[in-house]
Image: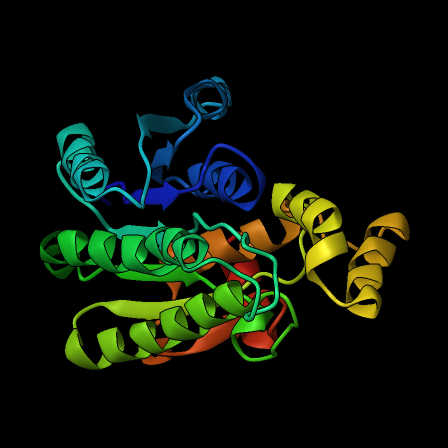
Length: 257
């Protein structure tokens, strides 16, 4: 069997790094990308030390030239691309719509929406050849509005629908959006700092309480589900928005362990 190649953005920490490790344990060659070179190289080195195969490519998904380099480096490393995991994302600006700057909305959209769209477009010739998959990491905020998160909510809702359109246009590949739950990542730390001023007090307090009470998910839990989807998501699921702990996802994870 040919070893699959998975490109994961935002892979230097949190959910992206945990997914890269999980996918490598399942036998994939993982190509990791993020803006932070030192952290990225450390994750890649850890995967190799565990006996996996990893290639690190520093880049910003909000930069088209960097997206082109990510795809080129992936093909140079293994000659193929089986799955793209669009995981990189930012949450700021955290501010009411009336107060947020247009430039901050534009910066978020470049990372959360335009970057995944462009990276997917560049990956398509290779994904068609491998009859591969694109997994877009979304959020419950795509379907449930959160005051102060206008830009983030809008970007994830748009990403969900982009995935559905892609599923219709590209029947030879699988396109899914993935809801990882509320995960203990650096983004949650940003919420606990910036959310104090940009969110209603009760909404802000809910996220702070989840942290203090230990109710945030460790990244490894949704990462294992995401890795299983990246490698084995069935074609008939294409276009779906799936949650990490959905029964069918958990069955897939168990069957592919």
